[in-house]
Image 1 (cartoon, rainbow, N blue to C red):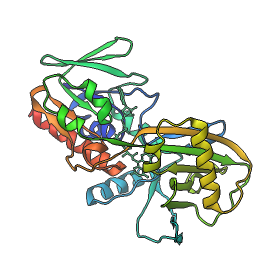
Image 2 (image 1 turned 180 degrees about the vertical axis):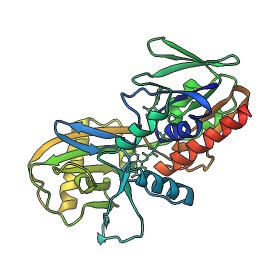
Image 3 (image 1 turned 180 degrees about the horizontal axis):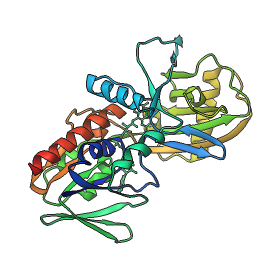
Length: 325
Ligand SMILES: Cc1cc2nc3c(=O)[nH]c(=O)nc-3n(C[C@H](O)[C@H](O)[C@H](O)COP(=O)(O)OP(=O)(O)OC[C@H]3O[C@@H](n4cnc5c(N)ncnc54)[C@H](O)[C@@H]3O)c2cc1C
């Protein structure tokens, strides 16, 4: 059996894993303690929130079928929400026909199921160096070596992928031309429900971009828990600002948006996503270098969404299998 390494257990890496698991021995590496990447949950005390992706939706027929499959397997449930649109001159429901799904009871429920297909999963393992000489060897930050592997998929954001590329590959120019946008994310839970007429809202003309009552999603705990995302533009402008300034500014904007005082805070957490979503949607699927059986995958190769990552992971697996054919 061929051996394959996947660096990054985000949706793209996990999707490639499903396609490759029966044809190769696959080892997955991730610097985090668990799989999922930006499909992420955060727990503080007894409260928890979806800290990254907020919901999954399908544009393509293929991904719609994947969602149906996950729904039948009990991995995702529909989030029946009617998001509002709040702008400087509009405030109200923004009906659409979009079906929104979430893994339950939290986002990581899906990734924890998908990682089960790996022959080996090396968690808390940041890969810092790779070398190809007919086969791949990888090293982590403690200088532990892994390999040899016949093929390699790198599923990390472009800036983090660059140092892992072999010097001879022509992929570096494309990778270097693609950027990610940041997103400050504030998580707040309250001792009593926040009295607003919406459970989620797309926000424009504000520091904020999205707010959602996390406990309106299926399977979540009952505590009134809110996810408050700053807009990408504001996050980029204030990427390196002190955390307390960011937190105060976001709370002030959220209070103004709600037009009501916030209830007593039970717990809160501020997270800076440096690489939240890709700035471009290149629609490339994945990037491959057959000379060294290397494929790069991730939403940034396709478009910024769980669906984009899923398409990229499938494409990456197909590219690698063709290199072995
Ligand atoms: C705040 C926010 C909100 C979002 N909202 C939505 C939404 O509502 N709907 C939607 O569809 N999408 C949303 N997205 C986007 C969606 O989360 C991503 O498109 C998708 O999860 C990307 O998956 P991926 O596999 O490409 O990358 P990632 O999930 O980023 O996976 C990359 C993995 O690589 C690991 N890694 C990085 N470097 C190394 C290394 N050197 N060694 C080992 N491991 C490494 C990371 O730990 C990570 O697990 C949102 C994203 C954010 C951040």
